[in-house]
Every structure is written in C-alpha cells, then in structure tokens.
Length: 388
Image (cartoon, rainbow, N blue to C red; front, side, top):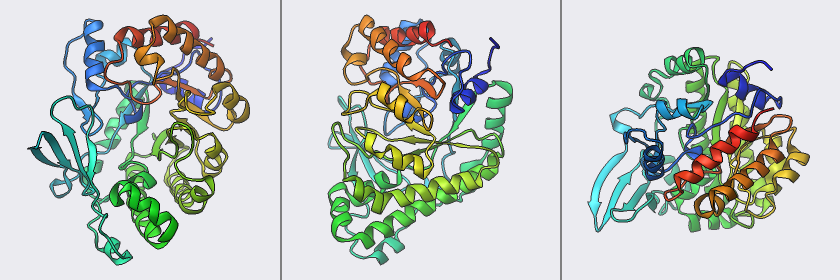
C-alpha cells in the first residue's frame, strides 16, 4: 500500500476512505488536548525535557511540542487566531482571596484556586443584569475584524501543509455560540430566557453569530485554499441526556448552527470540513447536526447514555467522521490498568476504523492524573491495530 503523508491520511479519513492507517491527533484542537501537568508527567516518562508551555490558560491545556509530535507521529497541527490588539487583550487581574482571576476579551470573568486548582471557572457573566435587547446592543462586543488576529496565519498554514505535510485545524474565535451565550448571560438566566424571553435569546445569539461570521470570513480570506478543517462547538449534552429538549434546541439554537456552518462553507476557497465539538449524550441530535452541515463529530463520549460506537458507525458512519471516540476518558484512561486501556482502545478502533471516517484522538482533554503508562498503552494500541 502507498505511504500517505499526514495531510493525505487525514483527508482520506474525512472522505470516508481507508488510508495506510488511522490518523492520529493529540493536541491540535483545544478539545483534543492534554492538561499541562499530565503532559509534564508524560514527557518525564518518555525522557523528554520539561519545557511545557500553556496553550490555553483558562482550560489549562499544553502545547504538545514538535519533539513529541514527531515521536508520536501526530498527523494534525493547529492554526489558532492570534491575540487581538492591546484594546481587546485578556486582562490578568491577579490573586484575590485565594483565586487567580482573568477577564477575557468578551468581558467574562474566570478564576482558579491558587492551591489545588485545575481549571479557571466562570464567576462573572457580563450580561447577567441586562434587562432589554437595547442593553445587548450597547454591549462592547469583541472586534473580530482586528487585523492583529490574522497576522501570519497564511504563512503558518502554508508551512504546516507544504513543508511539514501535516493536516491542520483552524481554531474558532470563541466557544460554541449557545455555550457562549450562557456564559455571558449566566446559565440559570439564559435557561429562563429560553422559556419566557426568546427576544433576549435571539438578541444575544445574533451578536455572537455576527462576531463568529466576521472572524471566519476574515480568517478564510487570509489563509486561502489550505483550510481543511474548521472548528466549531456547542455542548448540548449531559452524562445521561440533552441539556434542553430536542424540540427547544431545534427551535432556538439549531438555526444559528446552520447559518454559521453554511456561511463558513460559502466563504471557504476549497472544500472545508466542519468539526463540531458536542459533549455528552447527544445521539438524538445527530440527524439535525448532519442537516446543519456538520462533517466531523467530536468527542463522542462513549460512556454517556446511548453513545455506542458500533451503533453509530452502522447508522451514521457514512455521513459523519468521528474525531475522538478512542477510549473512555472518565474511568478507563484515568483509573484503569494499561491492559484495560488496550482492551477498550482496541474495541473502539474495531468499531470505528472500517471504511475510514475515524480520526483517533482522546475523548476530550487528557486530564491531570492520567498515568503516562496508560497514555502510552492507548497510543501503542493504535500502532498495533490501526493499520488498514
């Protein structure tokens, strides 16, 4: 069989074709990353230097490092937007009452305990006190057209594709539109708005959509025809069910997803695949996601209710690529033995790999405390059973 480049291998999987082996991603997306402390332990285990840097401060994930990308033969790299100009930069507020605090460019406040903290949690929702749609109009929304965001993106993308021969992943400017709306308004208030004040829901969602559309139009124009995967997200599920009824999602939120995905595809200069990060028990959303234009589903949390890899492959495997789905990240990866990790990973490869449409990646972030022996057992199982 022909030997594929990483770019060709990923592209074949997205076209639902079998390449030489299943493509591998660790850390290209924020949601396929690894916690900074987990990466330190892995690098120590592998005898690599402890030169870990933070990729995303709020969720505490690390930059993988080119040495580890080479050692593990990772097929995908990330092209993130640059920080905005000075006026839009994240504000570091420092330590107060045992918490390190941040205000992001959307005006949301995040804090992490100085002792024992793993992530920054939301503590300030800037639209919580908004009473009318005019309050939403007056809010100082981020400037997606800030040229600082796009400096060097094309050069970085061209180097990844043409020199390193990797597939690459264009990150989004924000979290999911619905998720972002809840963060800005406050979860409880936004859930109430969805039932009793839909005008407020649409006012907030329209502004977040507009910011995202401006970002994607400018980013796609800046980069040109090398965009393969566009990252989008919204967490619709909990462990056992959707967060809201499917009918409410279809009425209030789904139209914004479809508008954004259609817009991205219309502005891309070549075929682009929509990557959609959607946590939890979300099997019932899949037909709507396909209709909206989703091409790639992530992370496919296998121990959430009804998230069965074999059933998914049979029913939706021709329509969607799974990017994730490789090994239970809640029980087996952190607490299982290396052999249990191997057994679980082999099962998921057998379910998802046939016919392409599978990018092997962690099911969400590899957490602090996951043993490096388990991470390597997971990776070694891909090497053993991931060939076509």
